Length: 398
Image (tube, rainbow, N blue to C red):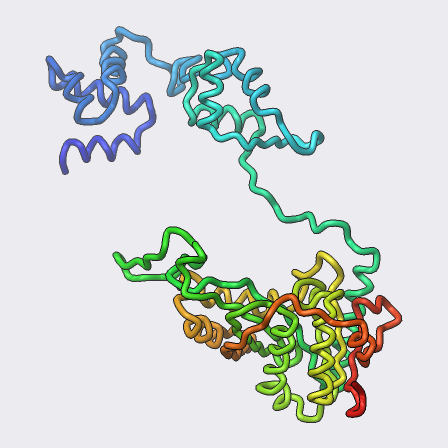
């Protein structure tokens, strides 16, 4: 064991007074120049070694029954600088609940140190952080808790959706939750999350997520079967439109629905109320009418109330697991996206099917009043804008 290693071990085992006396003992053993040599070998300040020598020689009083002399130790910044706290309060301008004992600030320590220096205060960032904690300040992040004003019939609509799902399950008819997942750029872009990799091996991606660096984009439209705990994702490459949404449902019905529900003539769709399948989207209803007539399906739709899309089952029963499965893996191609989605499973038995959709879906399409009037739609007595049923049209209907 080297002398330096010996000092390192003892420094962690001894308190301040014992460490000081030990250094003084070693310096006295070395004789002339011992203080400097011990300070260099131990990494301690030479004043600490010198104080240890003086205490051993009786030239300086030793604290009795305590580690430090009474009043020893560094004084608090607010004690040595009486106006520091007042000036700091003026800089912070606390925000938040006036009844709370915790305050917070968006100022960085560096900016506060510079601002205080202009007022004649000398303080380091570490000391300033201690002062802020002592005064009840702490760093805070924004929390997503504000959902906007809740609709008066929000809870009733949730109950209505639950009742509908139970009724369809009892009669062995399909009930699905649908939505479009976040659009993804294709290329060597960073994908959130961390993954185990061998030591020294790293995945390098682009610094910037510019659209111009992408080879395309993937638009995953998901359908989650509430009864069978199965997912289906139609991965498009063009636009998220009402036609794309209904085409995704059509593909699910042909690939999975007919096989799982061979006797079914009804379908329940639960969805949020915006984007491609919004409650006011007339193209959504028109294309659903086309699907209903093609497949001779009676399609019932139940929308979630405004500002409640996160409660849509597909979000936490399908999309969340897809994100976990492809974490930290760059989505370099559409094939990569489809493979990663298709291999998403859970211990509860979730299985997912993903297919590619190369069709184009033009935007800006409109539906005439005559086309709307021709829809075979029956609106529910309770919030008909959220709850409605589209029945197949007769062959003679326009």
